[in-house]
Image 1 (cartoon, rainbow, N blue to C red):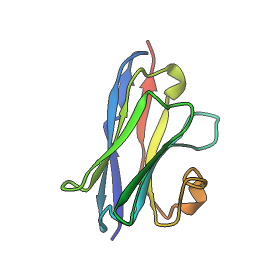
Image 2: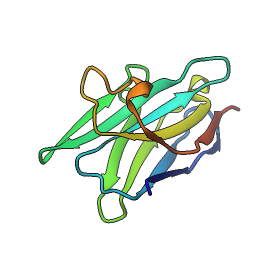
Image 3: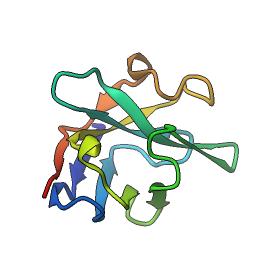
Image 4: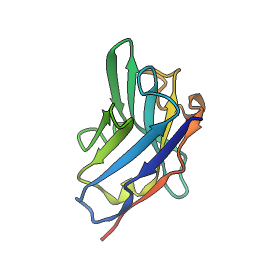
Length: 128
């Protein structure tokens, strides 16, 4: 059974950092794209970052709004994908979700409809 579980959210001041974790069970990371999405109050779900592992290669993409501030990484032993979030801004406040897909690429990773499996989400609040 495929399961994704996020953790690491919380309250942080502007300029601070958080690291989110997405623990995956039921499949291994190779051959899957794991992405982070977020949904802020009153806004649509937004793709934040994606790590796609295909044919022995790792591809990483970021939304323009987080480039240079967020870093996605993985631990194959723990079957976990991380999202390191630095220099956080109030506009980063949202519920963050991780999701898995075998069917995304550079031009489609941010399309939530292509993901079959989702975590329950973790709240990130950036406020002073």
